[in-house]
Picture 1 (cartoon, rainbow, N blue to C red):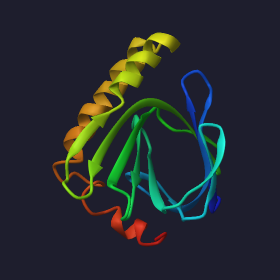
Picture 2 (tube, rainbow, N blue to C red):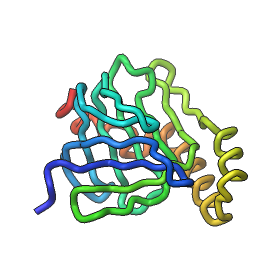
Picture 3 (cartoon, rainbow, N blue to C red):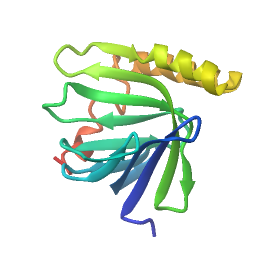
Picture 4 (cartoon, helix red, strand yellow):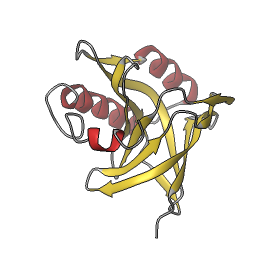
Length: 168
């Protein structure tokens, strides 16, 4: 039986801490594992203690090079996808991801979909020596997400809303 609480651990490619927080397992389906993070959740962000001010739902896909964060208002990003290595599960209660800097975001008010942090990706690629296959996968995931967040592809159209309603 899967644990009700999953520890989500993001690191950077050099192994440094990025994000770390507990999340409630909401469901698992063909898209991946849906995790809920209510407001007030204690977390670590860039190695420093933090508290989540706005709830969100995180989708960890079974095989994708990304994670999807689905946000309620007042957050200006409706969907925020981190380009990351595929999830590595440690048992049922801990998931490890390596954040690869690039983000694909859909803005709530305008629906604008944008690729962010290309400069950070370039710097870290050179500094930490991202292998060519990692670069290829990260760029392919970014291109796919740029289309999927804008064209009604699920889970980015409406399917996430039922899960977000459970943590808002």
